[in-house]
Length: 270
Image (tube, one colour):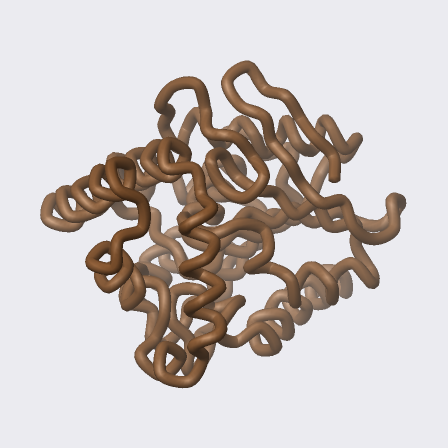
């Protein structure tokens, strides 16, 4: 478990697979950690070097000593590559992780070989959503994961079908929030909720890009994915059936198959 000390935060990541293989950097969703990529990481580590990062304030990584923006946080990703001795990698991000990955593709283009953007958005939050998310983050900072907070968060993260059929995964999500750093989650929600419109910058992305979205994603629905595809060239769109926002949790086999197919197509020059 490598540890990277940055000026305001200490980051932890898993380093899996052959050291001389093509590298993949995984960056997870808000309110989660690298474990949400367990299936994908294990599969890719057979043929790739996989760096599975816990982002600021999540999992084993610490909260930052001050607040930050997504533009600032995206500098953590090339710093992880430097720490691991990796020049370029395929960036695979989900939701917040994909917001960081797309920023790296613009601000650090020489570090991004390919780009997989899962269940994410380049657009800003509406004023209503921003206010709701900041209020929930403030309540979490004050009291932790109260049942009333979890009841509002759960439908944003999971589809109705998954909520009904996978109580063990919902318990795992609850337990992770109980363990989470309140300050770290508060800072991260602020960074995501207060982000600006990144749509104009998307046209600067030149890395081959795959955009993936669950067909039942309420937080960042299909229209948000199509918005990215319409602005990034070359890019492709994959829609995962029966999946909410955390597509790698609800449909690990399907999302892994889609990412693997994208990597294989690129390797073959297609």
